[in-house]
Image: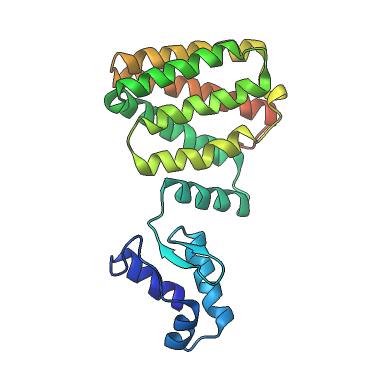
Length: 227
């Protein structure tokens, strides 16, 4: 299969990032495939983030290595196309975020800590604006994840967070009391990260995301498999 062959050449380094693939006409001649089959192979590679394609006479396909965003998009497509249960997403978040918080406490730069603090200030100010609160809440959790320096888990968080936040009407899921509790929880997690207290950051994040998962289960009446 042409896509698999080209993928192997790219990932092995035989075709380096920034280099151009053979033209569509050359690929047709070399592979013996039809033009439509070659185009489909190129589309597959583009979706995978391995090439960028420019149309037109002066266009062509240029090799690139997929970034974290490509991984997150692929996982988001998997979540949506397989109708992954919200409960499974919540379990993933509860399992992953405490570890990310501990890594952030160890690895975050001073600038990243300042960024988390700035986002937290906006979070406090958004308490009466549910739309802004939801967006800033997600921004803060992703800022913590990115400060972990674990590219795989960052991509995982980027993939699962948005579907969780989109799973229900936020106006129904959250209340002023819940929002105040979340602000207090974020402040505690941030304090632990600032103190480089990995264990404390993990414990506080686990308490926070577990509480949020319980709220989601209650509001959405999710089936957790319990009899």
